[in-house]
Length: 372
Ligand code: NDP
Image 1 (spheres, protein in one colour):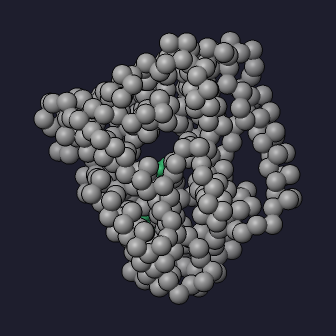
Image 2: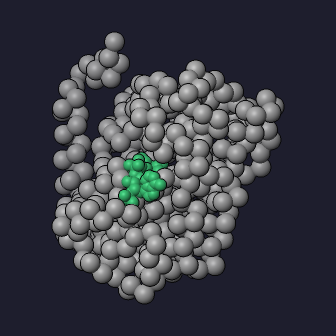
């Protein structure tokens, strides 16, 4: 059964129509903004020219407030390729040995770190010491201790630290948050977050404890963790968690295949979540209150995000998440704009504290109290 197709059929609308109509609306409004924009442009160097770095670079082609101007990579052939694709001058190209020299490059404002998780800590601190703003991919670090050190380094260097929480700028997500704040769902009672996919190549860094910091929880479970917080509007005060592993060859010691975890919030609401590298078709959020509900599926994929509430279908525009994120981050860095849901180091630190607590709960089999 194809639940997405069924959902679209119920709406009486084709997938193509759904895809194109809001996109053109978005493009129109964006074009108007583009014509009018004459403010500062965030000049960004991407570190780590992999799969997600490529997606961000492509999305930035449509940005007006941010521009890709530099690269940091360990692969000379990729540097050449990106230079010709994005018109990047030689003087803005670095490798992992010499990127501290970015300090004396006045043409780069910020570095976007898009490397494996285990490298973020040291790289972000080096970028901060070079005096550049940092955008870091999720998870910001491997644990809360590292996260705090990164925040401290950026503070000491007087640079901004932002984390690539692209869902914080996604229109349907923001609408559900608006409705929850307006009381449309009543008192929030429950959140469910299901996040997972079947992972392939057993040699990839995502299955390497040193580089990944764990398994599915670090990579995809973090969406349910972060989502439980922005959907309910609360931070958990306790965590319980259980791990199951069916493939001990692929998922070695310290690399989780599947973890189910539960949160309790100060209001008495609870959350029940699943993070896995062993199942597909898991990208679903469900928020329930005593007056209404919101369900989103897909809830965190690259899009289109789809969903409905007790009041009907969510019809906000489909966006390219990374384009909007970079436009907004330019405003956060240059104009001090406050996003509806924060994307700073402190926001990421909360997720890292929760991740630490989940792994501790798995290890001890006990409920872990949290104070965020
Ligand atoms: P990839 O493996 O596709 O790319 C990572 C890149 O990092 C590599 O291509 C390489 O680039 C560089 N790198 C440096 N050192 C290493 C190393 N030791 N092993 C492997 N690569 C290395 O990973 P992704 O792009 O999928 O993920 C990168 C980060 O982005 C992760 O933190 C991930 O969680 C996050 N991410 C976020 C998403 C989101 O939606 N916000 C989605 C996907 C990923 P080079 O050759 O240029 O040095």
